[in-house]
Length: 171
Image (cartoon, rainbow, N blue to C red; front, side):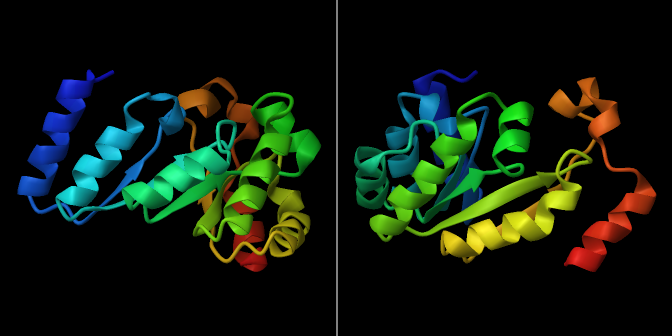
């Protein structure tokens, strides 16, 4: 929602306040045409910057640019195996996420995965773990989906308190 100038001013303000680390996320952070300028501004001011992506726009050119800018790493949102992930997000997004992981691995750019745990995917965690191991993923963040944002419209997907024990058992 910020203009490019407002975003760059915010970068300066955050650096002046002593911010050490920030995550650029969205929606989809790579959809901002000024993401490189924002990243560069923060990095030049001593802020460690990482980015969360759905993988849709990740290709070799983006990763090359991310390396040049000093982006510390990227995390790909992956909310289940192919059918589940595509149902939650949109058809074709699983393939894009897998491609993003492959590109980052091939280009030796630090990457990880973030999974929002919900009823739709809670029983897929072991299979998802195996998939991520096959992609050489070293960092996997699990977060419980809360009834806000898109999940506010799908309360039937939110994990019930007793089901949280399944996540603890898996961990």
